[in-house]
Image 1 (cartoon, rainbow, N blue to C red):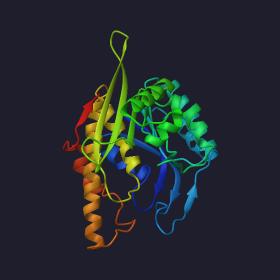
Image 2 (cartoon, rainbow, N blue to C red):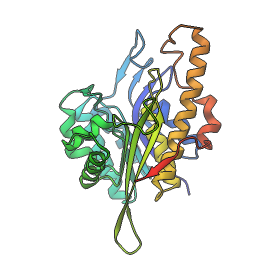
Image 3 (cartoon, rainbow, N blue to C red):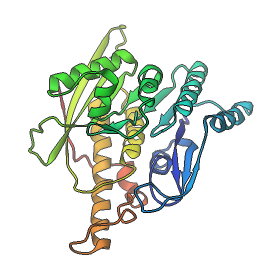
Length: 306
């Protein structure tokens, strides 16, 4: 059965971020991907220079209307990432709600990009829109610790806090929550990061059960762009294959990330030469070269069930 994703994200001519980070991996895994580019830039904004255009909420509406007029607005998934504009975000919510009315089984995967390490990198007024409008219609969300805290108003300083925050996020709407990175102390030592996940599953008898997992991921000494977008796309794909096994879906997703990042790091250091810091272009994700790992990753991360 064909599976179709509507992905509303950034586009760059050069490199991998937004739709460029999500489309190829999803297509490799057999998904049909319809992309709406929320921006079209020459490259990501971590370079010295960048040029390009931003799609407005009205322009997004026009594109969606075109799809609708041809009666091809039938989707199994919607995927969204970084947005800077409240009216654009509200239009996304309208589209998701309309698509869900047409297909009640549609799954909306949302990376609620607000900020990291205690500071916001989107305008303040996006916070209430995510909290009150976006998260309630989302099915799978991938916040980092800061975003999860911001959305729930509760701080995370222990694993117990993290579980409570994920439960609060479930109450807001999404059945699957993955906190992609946290400041919790890793058991494997300080060269690791702790990620946590929680999934509410409806059992055949009508009761709900929750699976919670913890996974420790090696830290990387480099700044990558587009990894969050790849992560959300891979979580979409692997939860599609393992809809009631968050442990397996996360092990596959984090393993893909590990392989792509390791390949990118070795390439970047090779290109930069000994003792030199790689440039943004050298640190672009090695996506095409990682095709085999995306399709069938060797599992290198083991999740613990809490």
